[in-house]
Image 1 (cartoon, one colour):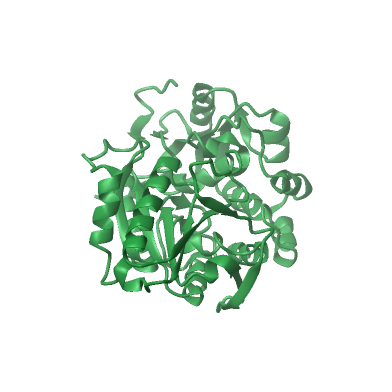
Image 2 (tube, helix red, strand yellow; image 1 turned 90 degrees about the vertical axis):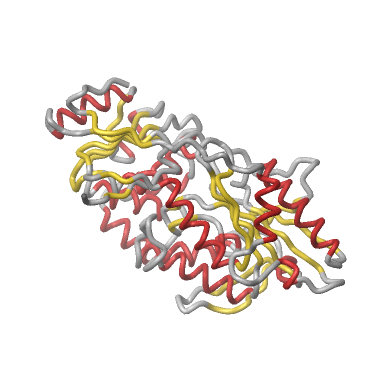
Amino acid sequence: MRVSDDNFYRILEPAKPPNSKDPTVQVSEALENPVGEVSLEDMVKPGGLAGIIVDPIVPSEIRRMAVQILTSRLNTAGVNETRVFLRKRLSSPTSPQVPSVEDPFRVLDPTTGIYTEIGKTSFGTSVNVEQELMSCGIRISIGMVLPHFASGFTGGPELVLPGASSIQTITKNRSLLMKSPSTPLTLTDNHVLSDSLEAYKLAGPFYSICFVPDGLGGIHSTFSGEMESTYRQAVSRYLQAHSPKIDRRSDIVLISAGRVLGMDLYHAVRVLSNALRAVKNGGTIILVAECSKGVGDSSFLDYAKRFRERKDLANELRYRFKLGGHVNLFLQDILEKYRVQVVSVLPDLYTRDSFQLKPSRTASEAIQKAVRAEGRDSKIIIISRGDLTLPAVELV
């Protein structure tokens, strides 16, 4: 892309990774030095049954390695059997998570299987958790911290709700977005996250391994321990690694959705939440997402065609909430406050006519349009890994 010197402000991209230890060493050391005072061995009952639930966003080589280390330690501690479960992400832009012959995983599908109700949260969510996982006396999660437009961050309690919960429980949890929109830089005042934390506590103790990515395909750091404390420690480290400081908001922010989330529009628009801390009120966000797999979720397109006004969509979801529609509402909230352009291969029929986004074919073209709209003295921030980066304004 071409940006004039007069308009250029900064490029925000992942810092060069530290000289991190091999992930195998990281996992072993994390298990030897857990967050808090609860170790894996403290939770083990000799002769018991252990269950490990894994998030597929953890790279396959890393999750297999972590499972092998955990299984070995559990066997040494006297566990009779270890069962391994793989969370199924209903809206994953990648191919369905089908374990390879090397993976000892059983996929948990929230639309099928047997779920048992373990209680109700203070938000009114009836928590139905997969029965076989609940039957395990020792429960362990393997996840990764990443920004998420609904829960703030993935990892931790998300391995229980939505990870091991029924579709009805997931739907109720996500409907809480109608009451409390999320912001990725905080773990407070987030109803979706608070609901998930209550759900995991109803399920009983979980030991957790939580990875922090380095932004270039590797692992920055690894934590283990009781689920909530480990999750919070991993989020804190994530913000240290991936929350670059800027001294002011910019008129224009160009943000890349990344290789995975940029595969379809349904996932790409979620990355817009990561740009909000860097763009001024009423400014322009340029979303760069190839969308090689099209729009994505069918409900996302259906709601866009049926509800052109935010208030009409909000009323519909308030009384008949459906997964997919919450992403439409999130997008319409942003469109009310910012100009949004999208650089993709999608036809204008979808981007402009259905989703009310301003289409461009190249990033340079989008920048030229944005400068005309914001003024020739406008400043531009470029975020090369929008799926990872959480800019933070730091007043000098």
